[in-house]
Image (cartoon, rainbow, N blue to C red; front, side, top):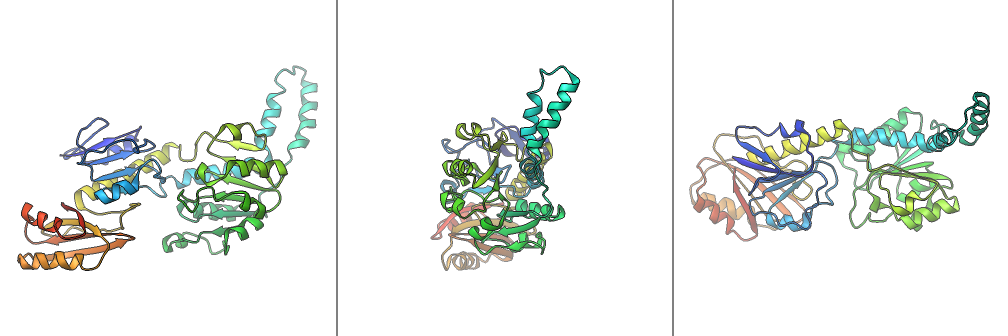
Length: 389
């Protein structure tokens, strides 16, 4: 019986993906084989030695100390694209909120609640609306920073609204490029996008290179009067630089999903309470994807959508399966294969992939692996995790 420990409120649609006949799922199970969570922070927790994998029902993994878990052979999964439609739709709402002064006009109408004379109310409404005329999105330029699953959807949506779209993503994958309309103009660098865009929307993860990368220097390059939308991560933006740009008029509005004391007080800021992926559909999609990835890994050793291990998958064949992870250095795979040959163990099929410093191999072999064999593979230099699946 495999055990899954859950944190947070995981959608039942996802939990139901664990086969009941050989999986136990609980928020309190001891010695779990894997963990499924959303926003729960693991940085201060000591994991049981039994944990083989962690799945985050969402795209970001800043609540998981990935670099600490990798040497232990713990595979960390995320669910890229599962919440992309929810975020796309909230970006659309943000574009409309920013272009039409909707929130400000609603506050104005709310301020008229004490007016009881219909004629006077009508007069005030007609007089007040002049402040909130706004402009249309058609013909404006949207700059999309990050063209992954979410960014590509937003770029394509903006084109359908009649907007011009500029995209910037120095690490654009082939898979993501296939999802992107050919009508999206590619910016050679970030400043080029900033200088040409009426609206800018951010869709990149937080890592050292992007931490606070929308800063004073970025705002010096930005088009006068632009609006910035950040539904990705608050840490991408230097808040003091945002406020300075808003105060100077360089930036006319900042719309974000990450409230802070300084931002809440500013009249040119529109804030959501972290709503980006908070739809029923998105939570279900993330839970289902995370659960399926854990089942495939625990049952078959396959790795899909890991943030720290290479993508490796192979259909099951006859025989028995062994997986192992090792430092990505020469001769490790050859040493393991020679070891199997010396023991007269026939290998039916295999796949080996690497990612940065990590290599991962799946082997399907004729004989059932013994504890002795697994120990011998474990003792190969640079191998740090072995499992019979």
